[in-house]
Image 1 (cartoon, rainbow, N blue to C red):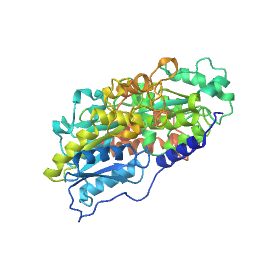
Image 2: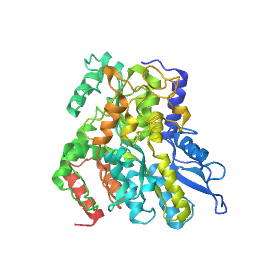
Image 3: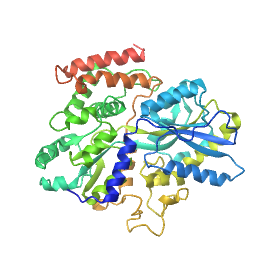
Image 4: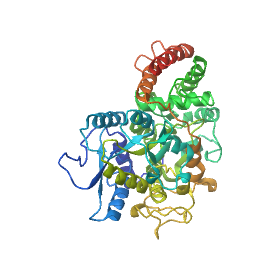
Length: 466
Protein backbone atom coordinates (compact mmCIF):
# COMPACT_ATOMS: atom_id res chain seq x y z
CA UNK A 1 0.00 0.00 0.00
CA UNK A 2 1.19 3.52 -0.72
CA UNK A 3 2.44 5.69 2.13
CA UNK A 4 -0.19 8.26 3.13
CA UNK A 5 0.88 11.55 4.65
CA UNK A 6 -1.50 13.25 7.08
CA UNK A 7 -1.88 16.26 4.80
CA UNK A 8 -2.85 14.02 1.90
CA UNK A 9 -5.39 12.18 4.00
CA UNK A 10 -6.92 15.45 5.14
CA UNK A 11 -7.11 16.70 1.56
CA UNK A 12 -8.82 13.50 0.45
CA UNK A 13 -11.35 13.71 3.27
CA UNK A 14 -12.08 17.30 2.25
CA UNK A 15 -12.65 16.23 -1.35
CA UNK A 16 -14.92 13.39 -0.27
CA UNK A 17 -16.92 15.82 1.84
CA UNK A 18 -17.42 18.12 -1.15
CA UNK A 19 -18.38 15.27 -3.46
CA UNK A 20 -20.91 14.00 -0.93
CA UNK A 21 -22.51 17.36 -0.23
CA UNK A 22 -26.30 17.11 -0.31
CA UNK A 23 -27.36 20.11 1.72
CA UNK A 24 -26.36 23.16 3.67
CA UNK A 25 -26.95 26.86 3.66
CA UNK A 26 -26.66 28.99 0.57
CA UNK A 27 -23.67 31.27 1.01
CA UNK A 28 -24.27 35.01 0.84
CA UNK A 29 -27.83 34.81 -0.49
CA UNK A 30 -28.84 38.24 -1.85
CA UNK A 31 -31.98 39.89 -0.56
CA UNK A 32 -34.65 41.87 -2.36
CA UNK A 33 -33.47 45.05 -0.59
CA UNK A 34 -29.87 44.69 -1.75
CA UNK A 35 -29.58 47.54 -4.27
CA UNK A 36 -25.82 47.75 -4.53
CA UNK A 37 -24.18 47.66 -7.95
CA UNK A 38 -23.62 43.97 -8.03
CA UNK A 39 -23.68 40.88 -10.25
CA UNK A 40 -24.85 37.72 -8.48
CA UNK A 41 -23.47 34.43 -9.81
CA UNK A 42 -25.36 31.26 -8.84
CA UNK A 43 -23.36 28.04 -9.00
CA UNK A 44 -22.98 24.63 -7.46
CA UNK A 45 -20.33 24.07 -4.84
CA UNK A 46 -16.73 24.52 -5.96
CA UNK A 47 -14.93 21.17 -5.70
CA UNK A 48 -11.61 22.99 -5.16
CA UNK A 49 -12.77 23.86 -1.63
CA UNK A 50 -13.26 26.93 0.52
CA UNK A 51 -12.17 30.10 -1.27
CA UNK A 52 -11.80 27.88 -4.34
CA UNK A 53 -10.71 28.83 -7.81
CA UNK A 54 -14.12 30.20 -8.87
CA UNK A 55 -14.19 32.61 -5.92
CA UNK A 56 -10.60 33.64 -6.60
CA UNK A 57 -11.45 34.49 -10.21
CA UNK A 58 -14.46 36.51 -9.10
CA UNK A 59 -12.25 38.32 -6.58
CA UNK A 60 -9.84 39.17 -9.40
CA UNK A 61 -12.66 40.68 -11.49
CA UNK A 62 -13.83 42.72 -8.51
CA UNK A 63 -10.28 44.02 -8.02
CA UNK A 64 -10.18 45.16 -11.66
CA UNK A 65 -13.57 46.86 -11.29
CA UNK A 66 -12.38 48.75 -8.24
CA UNK A 67 -14.51 50.30 -5.47
CA UNK A 68 -16.56 52.38 -7.93
CA UNK A 69 -17.39 49.47 -10.22
CA UNK A 70 -19.75 46.55 -9.98
CA UNK A 71 -19.23 43.86 -7.38
CA UNK A 72 -19.64 40.20 -8.37
CA UNK A 73 -20.77 37.80 -5.65
CA UNK A 74 -20.83 34.02 -5.75
CA UNK A 75 -23.86 32.18 -4.37
CA UNK A 76 -23.16 28.46 -3.92
CA UNK A 77 -26.27 26.32 -4.17
CA UNK A 78 -26.47 23.30 -1.86
CA UNK A 79 -27.32 19.77 -2.89
CA UNK A 80 -26.65 17.45 -5.79
CA UNK A 81 -26.66 18.59 -9.42
CA UNK A 82 -30.28 17.45 -9.78
CA UNK A 83 -31.27 19.47 -6.72
CA UNK A 84 -29.39 22.53 -7.97
CA UNK A 85 -31.21 22.34 -11.30
CA UNK A 86 -34.55 22.27 -9.50
CA UNK A 87 -33.53 25.21 -7.31
CA UNK A 88 -32.45 27.30 -10.29
CA UNK A 89 -35.54 26.49 -12.31
CA UNK A 90 -37.81 27.35 -9.41
CA UNK A 91 -35.95 30.55 -8.55
CA UNK A 92 -35.83 31.89 -12.12
CA UNK A 93 -39.41 30.94 -12.97
CA UNK A 94 -40.81 32.48 -9.79
CA UNK A 95 -38.45 35.44 -9.55
CA UNK A 96 -37.70 34.52 -5.94
CA UNK A 97 -33.93 34.95 -6.33
CA UNK A 98 -32.08 37.83 -7.93
CA UNK A 99 -29.50 35.96 -10.04
CA UNK A 100 -27.71 37.66 -12.93
CA UNK A 101 -25.39 34.83 -14.01
CA UNK A 102 -26.06 31.11 -13.63
CA UNK A 103 -23.52 28.32 -13.91
CA UNK A 104 -25.40 25.57 -15.76
CA UNK A 105 -24.57 21.94 -16.33
CA UNK A 106 -24.03 21.48 -20.06
CA UNK A 107 -27.19 19.36 -20.32
CA UNK A 108 -29.37 22.14 -18.91
CA UNK A 109 -28.66 24.79 -21.57
CA UNK A 110 -31.43 23.68 -24.02
CA UNK A 111 -34.02 23.51 -21.24
CA UNK A 112 -33.21 26.95 -19.79
CA UNK A 113 -32.98 28.50 -23.26
CA UNK A 114 -36.26 26.98 -24.45
CA UNK A 115 -37.97 28.28 -21.29
CA UNK A 116 -36.59 31.82 -21.91
CA UNK A 117 -34.82 31.78 -18.55
CA UNK A 118 -31.47 32.74 -20.10
CA UNK A 119 -30.80 35.20 -22.90
CA UNK A 120 -28.82 34.84 -26.14
CA UNK A 121 -25.31 36.25 -25.82
CA UNK A 122 -23.41 38.62 -28.05
CA UNK A 123 -19.73 38.47 -28.92
CA UNK A 124 -19.03 40.66 -25.87
CA UNK A 125 -19.43 37.62 -23.62
CA UNK A 126 -16.70 35.49 -25.19
CA UNK A 127 -13.09 36.32 -25.92
CA UNK A 128 -11.12 34.48 -28.60
CA UNK A 129 -13.93 32.06 -29.53
CA UNK A 130 -11.66 30.14 -31.95
CA UNK A 131 -9.60 29.06 -28.93
CA UNK A 132 -12.52 27.14 -27.38
CA UNK A 133 -12.45 23.35 -27.78
CA UNK A 134 -15.13 22.72 -30.47
CA UNK A 135 -16.82 19.78 -28.73
CA UNK A 136 -17.01 21.80 -25.52
CA UNK A 137 -18.22 25.02 -27.13
CA UNK A 138 -21.02 23.20 -28.95
CA UNK A 139 -22.76 22.70 -25.59
CA UNK A 140 -23.28 26.48 -25.38
CA UNK A 141 -25.76 26.63 -28.25
CA UNK A 142 -29.42 25.89 -28.72
CA UNK A 143 -31.54 26.45 -31.81
CA UNK A 144 -28.58 28.04 -33.58
CA UNK A 145 -27.94 30.69 -30.91
CA UNK A 146 -25.23 31.04 -28.28
CA UNK A 147 -26.81 31.08 -24.83
CA UNK A 148 -23.73 30.42 -22.71
CA UNK A 149 -19.94 30.32 -22.60
CA UNK A 150 -18.05 27.21 -21.38
CA UNK A 151 -16.58 27.79 -17.92
CA UNK A 152 -15.07 24.42 -17.03
CA UNK A 153 -15.38 21.13 -18.86
CA UNK A 154 -15.31 17.47 -17.82
CA UNK A 155 -14.82 13.99 -19.25
CA UNK A 156 -14.59 10.62 -17.56
CA UNK A 157 -11.07 9.30 -16.91
CA UNK A 158 -9.67 5.98 -15.71
CA UNK A 159 -7.64 6.03 -12.48
CA UNK A 160 -5.70 2.98 -11.36
CA UNK A 161 -3.13 1.71 -8.86
CA UNK A 162 0.22 0.95 -10.46
CA UNK A 163 1.39 -0.87 -7.34
CA UNK A 164 -1.53 -3.30 -7.66
CA UNK A 165 -0.61 -4.01 -11.28
CA UNK A 166 3.02 -4.62 -10.34
CA UNK A 167 1.99 -6.93 -7.50
CA UNK A 168 -0.18 -8.89 -9.94
CA UNK A 169 2.73 -9.25 -12.36
CA UNK A 170 1.11 -7.15 -15.09
CA UNK A 171 3.86 -6.07 -17.48
CA UNK A 172 2.10 -2.93 -18.67
CA UNK A 173 1.66 -0.56 -15.74
CA UNK A 174 1.54 2.74 -17.64
CA UNK A 175 -1.75 2.78 -19.51
CA UNK A 176 -1.77 6.35 -20.76
CA UNK A 177 0.54 5.82 -23.73
CA UNK A 178 -2.08 4.17 -25.94
CA UNK A 179 -5.83 3.86 -26.21
CA UNK A 180 -7.03 1.10 -23.93
CA UNK A 181 -9.93 -1.13 -24.94
CA UNK A 182 -12.47 -2.73 -22.63
CA UNK A 183 -11.27 -6.19 -23.66
CA UNK A 184 -7.74 -5.25 -22.52
CA UNK A 185 -9.09 -3.78 -19.31
CA UNK A 186 -11.08 -6.93 -18.52
CA UNK A 187 -7.93 -9.01 -19.01
CA UNK A 188 -6.27 -6.79 -16.41
CA UNK A 189 -9.25 -7.35 -14.15
CA UNK A 190 -8.54 -11.09 -14.34
CA UNK A 191 -4.87 -10.51 -13.56
CA UNK A 192 -5.37 -8.35 -10.44
CA UNK A 193 -7.99 -10.58 -8.78
CA UNK A 194 -5.45 -11.80 -6.24
CA UNK A 195 -4.05 -8.51 -4.91
CA UNK A 196 -6.37 -8.30 -1.92
CA UNK A 197 -8.99 -5.88 -3.19
CA UNK A 198 -12.73 -6.45 -2.89
CA UNK A 199 -13.24 -6.02 -6.64
CA UNK A 200 -11.42 -4.78 -9.71
CA UNK A 201 -13.13 -1.47 -10.39
CA UNK A 202 -15.88 0.89 -9.39
CA UNK A 203 -17.88 3.71 -10.95
CA UNK A 204 -21.13 5.59 -10.27
CA UNK A 205 -24.33 3.56 -10.76
CA UNK A 206 -26.65 4.86 -8.05
CA UNK A 207 -30.07 6.13 -9.12
CA UNK A 208 -28.91 9.59 -10.20
CA UNK A 209 -27.11 11.25 -13.12
CA UNK A 210 -24.02 9.07 -12.74
CA UNK A 211 -26.03 6.05 -13.91
CA UNK A 212 -27.06 7.95 -17.04
CA UNK A 213 -23.45 8.95 -17.73
CA UNK A 214 -22.23 5.36 -17.48
CA UNK A 215 -25.09 4.17 -19.68
CA UNK A 216 -24.38 6.72 -22.42
CA UNK A 217 -20.68 5.84 -22.32
CA UNK A 218 -21.53 2.15 -22.80
CA UNK A 219 -24.19 2.76 -25.44
CA UNK A 220 -22.01 5.03 -27.60
CA UNK A 221 -19.05 2.68 -27.25
CA UNK A 222 -21.14 -0.26 -28.44
CA UNK A 223 -22.76 1.65 -31.31
CA UNK A 224 -20.33 4.19 -32.85
CA UNK A 225 -22.09 7.41 -33.76
CA UNK A 226 -25.17 6.63 -31.67
CA UNK A 227 -27.17 9.67 -30.60
CA UNK A 228 -30.44 9.29 -28.74
CA UNK A 229 -31.65 12.65 -30.06
CA UNK A 230 -31.01 14.74 -33.16
CA UNK A 231 -30.20 18.45 -33.35
CA UNK A 232 -33.86 19.30 -32.74
CA UNK A 233 -34.07 17.12 -29.65
CA UNK A 234 -36.16 14.41 -31.30
CA UNK A 235 -35.63 10.74 -30.50
CA UNK A 236 -33.58 8.85 -33.10
CA UNK A 237 -32.44 5.50 -31.60
CA UNK A 238 -33.91 2.04 -32.24
CA UNK A 239 -34.28 -1.19 -30.27
CA UNK A 240 -31.34 -2.89 -31.94
CA UNK A 241 -28.98 -0.07 -30.99
CA UNK A 242 -30.26 0.00 -27.43
CA UNK A 243 -29.90 -3.77 -27.12
CA UNK A 244 -26.23 -3.53 -28.07
CA UNK A 245 -25.83 -0.70 -25.56
CA UNK A 246 -27.51 -2.59 -22.71
CA UNK A 247 -25.33 -5.63 -23.44
CA UNK A 248 -22.19 -3.50 -23.25
CA UNK A 249 -23.30 -1.82 -20.03
CA UNK A 250 -24.12 -5.16 -18.41
CA UNK A 251 -20.76 -6.66 -19.41
CA UNK A 252 -18.89 -3.66 -17.97
CA UNK A 253 -20.60 -3.88 -14.61
CA UNK A 254 -20.92 -7.62 -14.14
CA UNK A 255 -19.88 -9.33 -10.89
CA UNK A 256 -17.20 -10.12 -9.75
CA UNK A 257 -15.32 -7.39 -11.66
CA UNK A 258 -17.39 -4.54 -10.26
CA UNK A 259 -17.51 -3.62 -6.59
CA UNK A 260 -20.83 -4.74 -5.11
CA UNK A 261 -21.48 -1.29 -3.62
CA UNK A 262 -21.20 0.34 -7.05
CA UNK A 263 -24.94 0.05 -7.71
CA UNK A 264 -25.44 2.50 -4.82
CA UNK A 265 -22.34 4.64 -5.45
CA UNK A 266 -22.11 8.27 -6.43
CA UNK A 267 -18.91 10.28 -6.88
CA UNK A 268 -18.05 10.31 -3.16
CA UNK A 269 -18.64 6.60 -2.53
CA UNK A 270 -16.72 5.43 -5.59
CA UNK A 271 -13.83 7.76 -4.76
CA UNK A 272 -13.76 6.49 -1.19
CA UNK A 273 -13.71 2.85 -2.31
CA UNK A 274 -10.71 3.48 -4.56
CA UNK A 275 -8.89 5.62 -1.99
CA UNK A 276 -9.32 2.91 0.64
CA UNK A 277 -7.75 0.30 -1.64
CA UNK A 278 -10.94 -1.67 -2.21
CA UNK A 279 -10.52 -1.53 -6.00
CA UNK A 280 -7.63 -1.20 -8.45
CA UNK A 281 -9.50 0.86 -11.06
CA UNK A 282 -11.87 3.82 -10.83
CA UNK A 283 -13.92 5.77 -13.36
CA UNK A 284 -14.11 9.38 -12.19
CA UNK A 285 -13.74 13.02 -13.25
CA UNK A 286 -10.57 15.13 -13.68
CA UNK A 287 -11.04 17.17 -10.51
CA UNK A 288 -9.99 14.24 -8.30
CA UNK A 289 -6.57 13.87 -9.96
CA UNK A 290 -4.61 16.37 -7.82
CA UNK A 291 -5.82 14.97 -4.49
CA UNK A 292 -5.48 11.32 -5.54
CA UNK A 293 -1.91 12.05 -6.62
CA UNK A 294 -1.21 13.71 -3.28
CA UNK A 295 -2.46 10.53 -1.61
CA UNK A 296 -0.80 7.85 -3.76
CA UNK A 297 1.99 9.77 -5.50
CA UNK A 298 3.81 7.61 -8.07
CA UNK A 299 1.54 4.62 -7.43
CA UNK A 300 -1.35 6.48 -9.06
CA UNK A 301 -2.01 6.04 -12.75
CA UNK A 302 -4.41 7.96 -14.98
CA UNK A 303 -5.50 7.22 -18.54
CA UNK A 304 -8.28 7.91 -20.97
CA UNK A 305 -11.41 5.89 -20.35
CA UNK A 306 -11.69 2.90 -22.71
CA UNK A 307 -14.31 3.46 -25.39
CA UNK A 308 -16.29 6.67 -25.27
CA UNK A 309 -16.35 9.16 -22.41
CA UNK A 310 -19.27 11.49 -21.73
CA UNK A 311 -18.69 15.23 -21.91
CA UNK A 312 -19.59 17.09 -18.73
CA UNK A 313 -18.91 20.54 -17.41
CA UNK A 314 -20.61 23.83 -16.68
CA UNK A 315 -21.41 26.88 -18.80
CA UNK A 316 -22.08 30.46 -17.72
CA UNK A 317 -25.26 32.19 -18.91
CA UNK A 318 -26.99 35.52 -18.28
CA UNK A 319 -30.51 35.30 -16.89
CA UNK A 320 -33.43 36.84 -18.77
CA UNK A 321 -34.72 38.48 -15.59
CA UNK A 322 -31.70 40.69 -14.98
CA UNK A 323 -31.86 44.31 -16.10
CA UNK A 324 -30.31 45.37 -19.41
CA UNK A 325 -27.64 47.38 -17.60
CA UNK A 326 -26.63 44.49 -15.36
CA UNK A 327 -26.88 42.06 -18.29
CA UNK A 328 -24.17 44.02 -20.11
CA UNK A 329 -21.93 43.89 -17.04
CA UNK A 330 -22.75 40.21 -16.55
CA UNK A 331 -21.53 39.51 -20.08
CA UNK A 332 -18.27 41.31 -19.27
CA UNK A 333 -17.89 39.19 -16.14
CA UNK A 334 -18.46 35.99 -18.14
CA UNK A 335 -15.85 37.08 -20.69
CA UNK A 336 -13.35 37.58 -17.86
CA UNK A 337 -14.13 34.32 -16.06
CA UNK A 338 -13.74 32.30 -19.28
CA UNK A 339 -10.79 34.10 -20.88
CA UNK A 340 -7.52 32.22 -21.63
CA UNK A 341 -5.90 33.39 -18.38
CA UNK A 342 -8.83 32.20 -16.25
CA UNK A 343 -8.97 28.87 -18.06
CA UNK A 344 -5.28 28.28 -17.35
CA UNK A 345 -6.01 28.94 -13.65
CA UNK A 346 -8.94 26.51 -13.72
CA UNK A 347 -6.75 23.81 -15.28
CA UNK A 348 -4.07 24.22 -12.65
CA UNK A 349 -6.71 24.01 -9.91
CA UNK A 350 -7.88 20.62 -11.18
CA UNK A 351 -10.75 21.51 -13.51
CA UNK A 352 -10.72 20.64 -17.21
CA UNK A 353 -10.13 23.88 -19.10
CA UNK A 354 -12.33 24.76 -22.07
CA UNK A 355 -9.62 26.40 -24.20
CA UNK A 356 -6.92 24.75 -26.30
CA UNK A 357 -4.38 27.40 -25.31
CA UNK A 358 -4.63 26.43 -21.63
CA UNK A 359 -3.06 23.05 -22.45
CA UNK A 360 0.11 24.46 -23.98
CA UNK A 361 3.37 23.94 -22.13
CA UNK A 362 4.29 26.29 -19.31
CA UNK A 363 5.92 29.36 -20.80
CA UNK A 364 3.82 29.23 -23.97
CA UNK A 365 0.37 28.90 -22.37
CA UNK A 366 -1.55 31.90 -20.98
CA UNK A 367 -0.26 32.83 -17.55
CA UNK A 368 -2.48 32.28 -14.54
CA UNK A 369 -2.48 35.84 -13.23
CA UNK A 370 -6.06 36.01 -11.98
CA UNK A 371 -5.55 33.45 -9.17
CA UNK A 372 -2.08 33.82 -7.62
CA UNK A 373 -2.39 30.61 -5.58
CA UNK A 374 -2.30 28.66 -8.85
CA UNK A 375 0.08 30.87 -10.80
CA UNK A 376 3.36 29.68 -12.24
CA UNK A 377 6.20 31.21 -10.29
CA UNK A 378 9.59 30.65 -8.67
CA UNK A 379 8.25 27.70 -6.68
CA UNK A 380 7.41 25.56 -9.68
CA UNK A 381 9.03 22.17 -9.91
CA UNK A 382 11.26 20.96 -12.77
CA UNK A 383 8.15 19.49 -14.41
CA UNK A 384 6.75 23.00 -14.79
CA UNK A 385 3.97 22.53 -12.24
CA UNK A 386 3.66 23.80 -8.69
CA UNK A 387 4.65 20.96 -6.40
CA UNK A 388 2.56 22.44 -3.59
CA UNK A 389 -0.78 23.10 -5.29
CA UNK A 390 -1.08 20.77 -8.30
CA UNK A 391 -0.25 17.23 -9.36
CA UNK A 392 2.57 16.89 -11.88
CA UNK A 393 1.62 17.26 -15.50
CA UNK A 394 4.51 15.06 -16.64
CA UNK A 395 3.67 11.36 -16.54
CA UNK A 396 5.68 8.22 -17.21
CA UNK A 397 7.14 7.96 -20.69
CA UNK A 398 7.23 11.72 -21.11
CA UNK A 399 3.47 12.02 -21.50
CA UNK A 400 1.60 15.13 -20.45
CA UNK A 401 -1.52 14.54 -18.34
CA UNK A 402 -3.21 17.66 -19.68
CA UNK A 403 -2.17 17.49 -23.34
CA UNK A 404 -1.98 13.75 -23.98
CA UNK A 405 -4.85 12.47 -21.81
CA UNK A 406 -7.27 15.18 -20.74
CA UNK A 407 -7.41 17.31 -23.91
CA UNK A 408 -7.95 14.34 -26.30
CA UNK A 409 -10.63 12.98 -23.94
CA UNK A 410 -12.50 16.30 -24.13
CA UNK A 411 -12.15 16.56 -27.90
CA UNK A 412 -13.56 13.09 -28.49
CA UNK A 413 -16.13 12.98 -25.69
CA UNK A 414 -19.76 12.33 -26.55
CA UNK A 415 -22.79 14.41 -25.63
CA UNK A 416 -25.66 13.25 -23.53
CA UNK A 417 -28.99 13.80 -25.32
CA UNK A 418 -29.41 17.50 -26.17
CA UNK A 419 -33.04 18.34 -25.58
CA UNK A 420 -35.12 20.73 -23.46
CA UNK A 421 -36.63 17.55 -22.01
CA UNK A 422 -33.31 16.26 -20.71
CA UNK A 423 -34.58 16.01 -17.13
CA UNK A 424 -37.27 13.57 -18.25
CA UNK A 425 -34.83 11.65 -20.47
CA UNK A 426 -32.27 11.07 -17.73
CA UNK A 427 -34.98 10.10 -15.25
CA UNK A 428 -36.27 7.54 -17.78
CA UNK A 429 -32.80 6.03 -18.19
CA UNK A 430 -32.26 5.91 -14.44
CA UNK A 431 -35.64 4.29 -13.81
CA UNK A 432 -35.50 1.68 -16.58
CA UNK A 433 -31.94 0.68 -15.69
CA UNK A 434 -33.10 0.00 -12.14
CA UNK A 435 -33.77 -3.46 -13.52
CA UNK A 436 -29.98 -3.93 -13.54
CA UNK A 437 -28.96 -1.99 -10.44
CA UNK A 438 -32.03 -1.53 -8.24
CA UNK A 439 -33.03 -3.57 -5.18
CA UNK A 440 -34.83 -6.19 -7.29
CA UNK A 441 -32.09 -6.57 -9.89
CA UNK A 442 -30.84 -9.93 -8.64
CA UNK A 443 -34.32 -11.49 -8.37
CA UNK A 444 -35.43 -11.64 -11.99
CA UNK A 445 -33.42 -9.32 -14.27
CA UNK A 446 -34.76 -9.00 -17.82
CA UNK A 447 -32.74 -10.02 -20.86
CA UNK A 448 -30.91 -7.36 -22.82
CA UNK A 449 -33.43 -7.27 -25.67
CA UNK A 450 -36.37 -7.06 -23.27
CA UNK A 451 -34.80 -4.24 -21.26
CA UNK A 452 -33.86 -2.39 -24.46
CA UNK A 453 -37.45 -2.67 -25.69
CA UNK A 454 -38.78 -1.18 -22.45
CA UNK A 455 -36.23 1.62 -22.61
CA UNK A 456 -36.97 2.33 -26.27
CA UNK A 457 -40.70 2.61 -25.66
CA UNK A 458 -40.22 4.80 -22.58
CA UNK A 459 -37.82 7.20 -24.33
CA UNK A 460 -40.06 7.43 -27.38
CA UNK A 461 -42.97 8.29 -25.14
CA UNK A 462 -41.04 10.94 -23.22
CA UNK A 463 -39.77 12.65 -26.35
CA UNK A 464 -43.23 12.42 -27.93
CA UNK A 465 -42.28 12.40 -31.56
CA UNK A 466 -43.29 8.80 -32.39
